[in-house]
Structure formats: structure tokens, C-alpha cells
Length: 78
Image 1 (tube, one colour):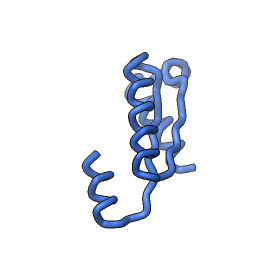
Image 2 (cartoon, one colour):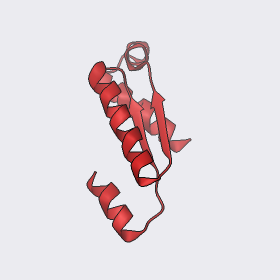
Image 3 (cartoon, one colour):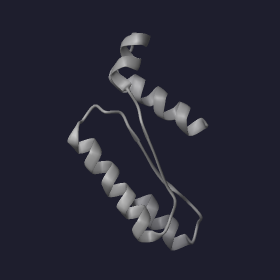
Image 4 (tube, helix red, strand yellow):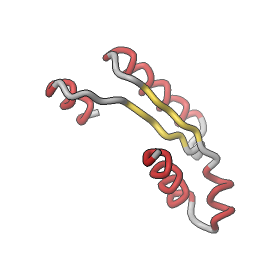
């Protein structure tokens, strides 16, 4: 939130995005709604991606946290 505020004050061009790992249920949905509404209210593009983090973690034999990080970073690289 602070970076968003500072970017707006500095007149930087930026977007808001959120990666949902499906590990927190309704809280994740609420986070996505909040970020989307914020993006709309300040007029910046909004991007979101939902991942099946649990299956990815199981398939790779890693923790949920590591899986979420991998998925998020891979998405951001694209």
C-alpha cells in the first residue's frame, strides 16, 4: 500500500497485481477484491492470477510457501 501511495505521489506509471495461492480461502478472495477495487479507484491496470499451489507443492515435494513463491516469481517473469 505504501509503494502504491508513493508511486502515485511521484507520478510513476505502475500496475497493481495479485497472485492468489488458494491457501487462505475467503481471505484470499477478499484480498483480490480489495486490490481490484483499489486499482479501479485510482485508475491503474489490474492483473491477477490464481494458482493451484497445493498440487504444485506436492508434485515438487516442497512447502506451500516455496511453491507459492515459485509460482508467483514465474508469473512475474512472464
